[in-house]
Length: 371
Ligand SMILES: Cc1cc2nc3c(=O)[nH]c(=O)nc-3n(C[C@H](O)[C@H](O)[C@H](O)COP(=O)(O)OP(=O)(O)OC[C@H]3O[C@@H](n4cnc5c(N)ncnc54)[C@H](O)[C@@H]3O)c2cc1C
Image (tube, rainbow, N blue to C red):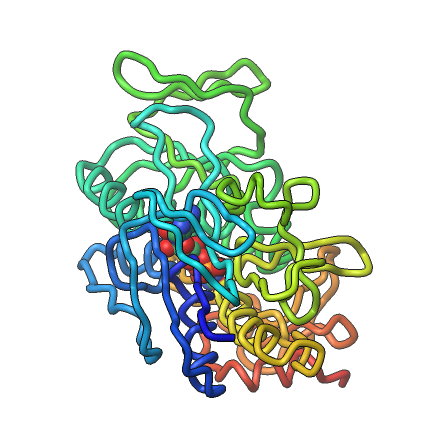
């Protein structure tokens, strides 16, 4: 393999490129990235970038000697070349697809904000500094972090979510604690879905199924993301619109092509699934490099699920998937009532540390322990 093209210049793509070089790949390596900035840690966009005291976001460290084509999108894939938006065709022997995903929106209004890129974060921060009334749609990790940032910047925030925010992601115990912290910080939380969102003369109107109409200056939508696969539409790589990879990140049925990170679906006996979190993108980038160079001899993907979030002045780290039903955890340190603890759920492969220092490998070990 002489020429490898990596499309997507963020954590999955950059980790894959670095790993290819570490494994001894000495051919031509080219990155294509739609954003005209050095790769950066996306999780900081809803944390450091919305902090009352602005914190510079350091670029991701990259080691691989490579050609970088930044500020250009891949627009199509031919059997042996990637086509760019300026008409260039980049031939490849090996291809890495790491184009991530884009935020879902509910309108085309400029008063509806989403958060996926550095440019989005700059625009959102600038608007929040004017202290608008904000309706946050979606109580997942992103909606809750943005609500926390908006409150910190002095905004009045209403958050809409069916059920307890974060409970679907983190289970009722952790979701309940973070939702309580949000309510104590002054967020009005409504247990509801949204019927429609429209722009008004002055701001935004969100209509609920109850008929109630909520008026605010802006809306922030945090209702999930869709993989960036439009440029692959006629490539033959997609199955029902999905880019599906095997346990070595190889695109099913397409030798010489791997994918990593938020863009891909992981083949699984229970059906394809995504794992759109930072450490998964990083690990998948590593596995993809081996999958491309070593084929069937490459190690399979095998990393524990890890997620963290910072909001309401606390930091939560989670290893594994906490039970979705109400299962009492074992408290290892601290106290659940005081919302400062290390806990685990024996038999569920999950552990969490809230407002406690805990090295991630130790959290994984605790999650795996049965006692
Ligand atoms: C605001 C925010 C906060 C987050 N916080 C957390 C957190 O606290 N914890 C956690 O675990 N995870 C968090 N995540 C998720 C995590 O950041 C992602 O899982 C991770 O960034 C995925 O990496 P990736 O390289 O697959 O994709 P991305 O980081 O999305 O990068 C994809 C890159 O490809 C580029 N691209 C797209 N299409 C094209 C194209 N056609 N041609 C060329 N380039 C293209 C994009 O511009 C982008 O630069 C957060 C995500 C966001 C948006």
